[in-house]
Length: 159
Image 1 (cartoon, rainbow, N blue to C red):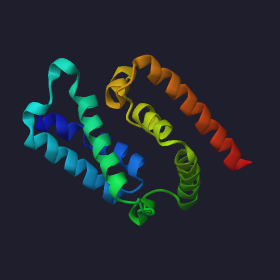
Image 2: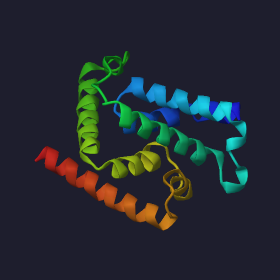
Image 3: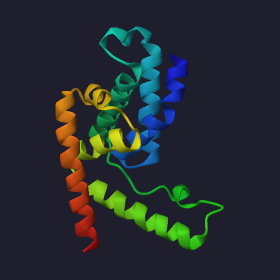
Image 4: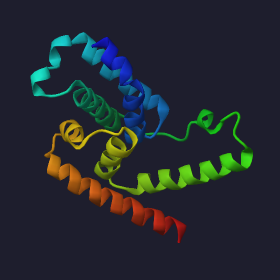
């Protein structure tokens, strides 16, 4: 189980950042999820599905718990520094990242989550269904609506 957890670290952290909005709270949520899973090794039942979506669901639930208790705060300044990249290229990347982040932030939380699970973490529809506890057909329709909403938000921001 520890090996599977290690492989999911970056994906779990990315999901937590998208839900919570900052790295510190995301690290807390992922740490809490790890602690929960490691302290209750019998909690995962392989008969109910794959480990990856189950663990990401634990992370998602920890994020929701933190959101209930805390308000997310600003941007991580360290994420702005990228050595080896030309300044003008970095400015373009930052502008694009800011535009996408602003558009994502304007979406409803369920739309943002489903986009992160599919497009950033590259989960299959069945895995997303397991993480969100919805039917696979619902994943497809929600993902379609979320992508349309993101496109519309990006167009509004650039208009």
